[in-house]
Image 1 (cartoon, helix red, strand yellow):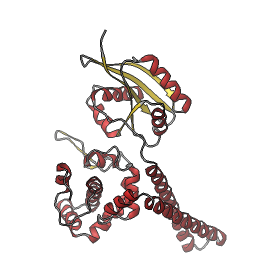
Image 2 (tube, rainbow, N blue to C red):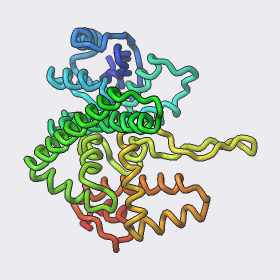
Image 3 (cartoon, rainbow, N blue to C red):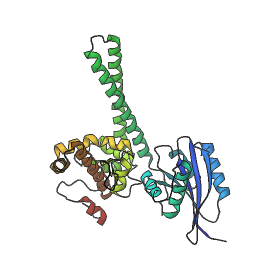
Image 4 (cartoon, rainbow, N blue to C red):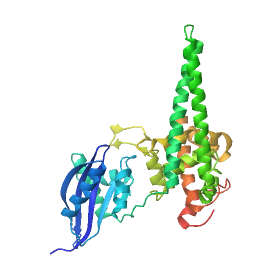
Length: 347
């Protein structure tokens, strides 16, 4: 009888269902994906999933449940499995997509995706997931709520401007719009105060926020959003992963001499991170000589200002990660932060 080295449960998580495949690796490093089933993305479905896995797998070898970090849909399942003492690994989506390209998969379906996740768990040494600190979840929820209020306020202000310039605007409608804007202003202020109280109550996080905010263009609310959306860079191991997680990585398709698309950012990542980096990049270009020099050099090279702004966004995001990990303040005289990170020195 073959000895099993690893067993994995590959889970492709959607809003309403969990597509599951089981995989195992034996002592000869032979990999087999051998079972498949779909469960509801509910507490009842989680219980059924665990019962099914227990029946289909060997009790002699530890079982690892592997899933992608898909927005918020995977969170309830991850917490459930953690609470019933199961090993869980959560992987950034770009890692799975890059791995899937190496497999001979002709048609991509939910089933093939779960099979790829199961194989990925068998072939890689993955870290065991633990729930992030509650403060990160609280900050994330508050930052996203604030973003919704800002979007709504912008829409109302545009509507108010249109009403003021119109000859046929209704006075009572204008009054109600102004009242809604005032209410949003008050609620947005309450959120900012809640965020400040949370950070002030955690001295370690407060010090970290001060470090990240030392970067040109990165204000306190931007720093909080970055840290909240990455759970303190929990799943991030290097700058490349962070850029990809934010969807700021560049994609380009080139084949021979006939196919050549323009390089553009993938936008396959956390939209909150992408959005929050726009104005800090503009502020850094305006106020810091180093970033202004980079911006001007890139514009002179290809003549596209927005492309140069995105490059600054990437650099700022990478800097937050490096300074957070090194626990060091931004130094405008230092040249290459990545060298310090690799060698493990302080800046």
